Amino acid sequence: MNIKFNNKVVQITGAGSGFGRLAALEFSKLGARLVLSDVNEAGLDETMKQLGDGGDRTLALLCDVSKEDQVEKMTKAGIAHFGSLDIAINNAGVAHNMARMAEASLKEFDFVMAVNVRGVFLSMQQELRQMNKQGHGVILNVASVAGLIGAPLAGAYTASKHAVIGLTKAAALEYARKNIRINAICPAFCYTPMVDQLIGGEGGRKREQDMAHVIPMGRLGSAEEIVNGMIWLCSDQNSFTTGQALAFDGGLTTA
Ligand SMILES: NC(=O)c1ccc[n+]([C@@H]2O[C@H](COP(=O)([O-])OP(=O)(O)OC[C@H]3O[C@@H](n4cnc5c(N)ncnc54)[C@H](O)[C@@H]3O)[C@@H](O)[C@H]2O)c1
Image (tube, rainbow, N blue to C red; front, side, top):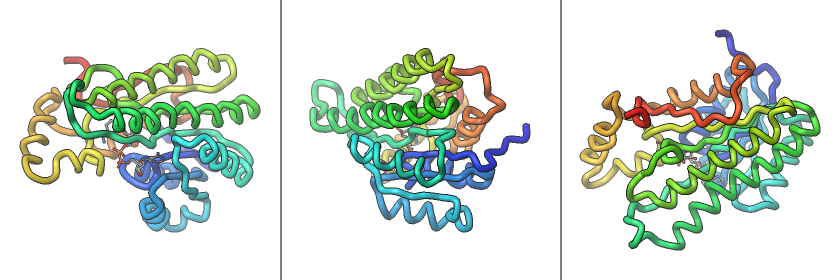
């Protein structure tokens, strides 16, 4: 399958690290023009550095996805710069300290909901207004296997990713006849800075082994495996799939 995104405008949130950065690099190699954003300026600068010449076809903007005015400003700036918005990957997300529900922090719950749920909602609102106007578009929300099954000690994260899938399904039905496809990707544990934090430090090796143990394939995933999935899900080759929450999880949600 020869997938190309020549001149397609691809917007990626959380592009300063992990999946978002790698997606930026890979979509750029496939010819896309990029609108990249992150709340972390240093991370975004590093992505721009790694893009090399691809940076000439890239607009990079600071944006906190939980803030309506910033999401509106970022999306409108991309549209003004490139003239359209073909593909949007709503990837920015945060995890939280592991805790059983009775001991979990309300502050962390509110923060995770603000970034992971409100952030996707606000992003989709802006994206859909433009895509509806131009008559086409593809949205890919980055959920998690924690959106499909329960993740113990991660109640807020689990709830937030279930909500991302809910938003994906509702919007997919609303826009199915408008030439706009909306799906979610649901990775299991993969090696990105988010997971590196969990498996670093004291007891980290044991936690990594525990994570690998629950995955039928017996290992964590790589960021490349997820980004390859993103590329196919966003491509024209995937033209009859909408409203799906696709697991990339080494068999975890099948067990
Ligand atoms: N790594 C995994 O195993 C895994 C598994 C399932 C789902 N995910 C999801 O994948 C997405 C990307 O995670 P990652 O693993 O690449 O993590 P990461 O921490 O490497 O990257 C997340 C990026 O999002 C940015 N971000 C955080 N809050 C933001 C905000 N308010 N506004 C804008 N940007 C913000 C961060 O600065 C960072 O650059 C997240 O939604 C995460 O929940 C990750």
